[in-house]
Amino acid sequence: MKIGIPAETRAGETRVAATPETVKKLVGQKHEIFVQSGAGLASAITDEAYAAAGATIVDRAMDVLAGCDMLLKVRAPLENEISAYRAGQIVVGMLNPFDAAGLEAMNKAGLTAFALEAAPRTSRAQSMDVLSSQANIAGYKAVMVAANEYQRFMPMLMTAAGTVKAARVLILGVGVAGLQAIATAKRLGAVIEASDVRPATKEQVESLGAKFVDVPFETDEERECAEGVGGYARPMPESWMKRQAQAVHERAIKSDIVITTALIPGRKAPTLLHEETVAQMKPGSVVVDLAVEQGGNCPLSRINEVVDVNGVKIVGYPNLAAMVAADASALYARNILDFLKLVFDKEGQFKIDLEDDIVAACLMCTGGELKRKNA
Ligand code: NAD
Image (tube, rainbow, N blue to C red; front, side, top):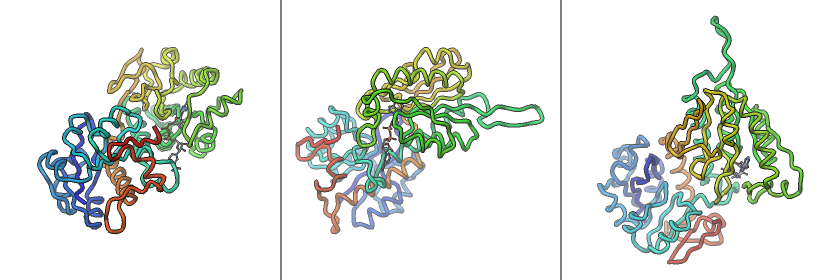
């Protein structure tokens, strides 16, 4: 099959959906690969490196779009891109299963679209789990960004000129990103506390050497909500959120860095760090809100801005994985490569096997019919 890698078009997107390593493997599977010139540059991949792996380099996006049967993307195509696609083309990427308008536009254009974020969180799907591969990077980078904004050391230091205290870091939301944030802050010598609604995270937090901030459940409704669906959190009852806000407040005002990562799929992110709490945080402390694109865990965070509230810096970078573009692309491209094994048979023919739970979950639309299962 002719497979195209167009350059990403969304603002700030530095990642690319294939690397020379994955191109080589696809060429080995008898596919023809077309890469738009410059598509990999922001991830430190040159046209020459793609060509050496067996890809054909084409100048314009139009040449990729017109000539290929399948397009590998990082983010969903914008509306003006979709108008250049043709019916029957296959698109694979992080297409945002919760963006009804975007999916409808792809469906109207007659595309077959696979959104990899919709894959189930099962062992078999792990190697193609784009949410995990990218959240892992975001969690790491969140600590790097925080350390950069923070005007003090992270580790405890005993020097001839006196002792410097270790930074106190509070991590709210302990999914893939939160766990990596704990591990990264730990390596830098910080003292860490972390909280999540899912009770299963307590053990994970403690195994990384951090302290778990427990907000006990008082009703069956609270406990059931916290158990969530498919491992994902659900919105918690107001009663629990109030007690959590109090527990967070008590820790946040003593913390130097707060990293928030709490998400609820398909919904606005829950508010965990309230304005009143930020008002009492120490000047010089830093908040990194990873949920800023979903409305933020702190109402004061703003997309793409570092807001200063009485000396507390609130960082709202929306796409932290794109700030580690080379590794983010390398891992993402391998996720894509693994997913493609499910949609090509041994002869390299494209097929949609709806008996396969991963394929069925990721298929958003085909033949003019919306199929979204996880939305
Ligand atoms: P996510 O990005 O959807 O959310 C981040 C974290 O925020 C989650 O841990 C969630 O529980 C937490 N959260 C939501 N509301 C909160 C609140 N009010 N207060 C505190 N925390 C709150 O999470 P994720 O990293 O995508 O992980 C989601 C699930 O998938 C987890 O159960 C994880 O263990 C599971 N997972 C499984 C696999 C696998 O088996 N292959 C791989 C990765 C993740």
